[in-house]
Image (tube, rainbow, N blue to C red):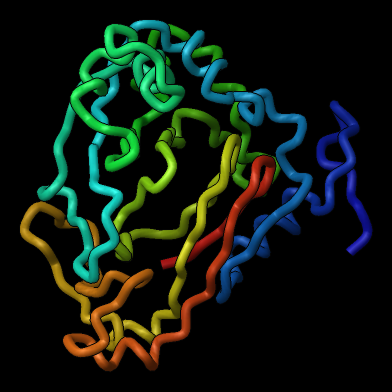
Length: 242
């Protein structure tokens, strides 16, 4: 498709117009990766050092998991939780002195990962509401949606969430720093994923299978599932549907 100008005001050339992008988002039956749609977003420069400056001493709840490879999914109730700042998190992953990493120092980063997931930007930046305008989903055909409708996810290498489906709409992700690998399955594969509703979660259905290291004896039908594996790099957007 020929490049299209997104927004006459800024004149930024993008691969899709907002309406074209919206049509792709709402019509997608397979994972879609967008390139060159968010390069001009100020939020595309929200790297970890920048976020440390933005959030200062504000604490976030981090989930701490084990890096060990196991055929059982590591569900959230099986993890440890701590409250820490992004500065402390950054110090921990960089190997700084224990006093700089605060509560993270109790965990060996060679054996553990940390994940601050699903943090609502509207709450994080309640005292800096102007930052919410640095996200603009209008480029994807959703005018009026900005940081108020978005969440922040920050994790160390190895951080993960067990395979699941959220029972609402679709999700559009912007990768700012690092890489994130997605294992996505078509709804027709649901029966092969051994779905379960675990007690602590009402809006999601999880798989009993660790999809990156399955127990073939316990879950033989998983061999009939066909994953779409997508690795997002900085500046890329991924759309995945329920």
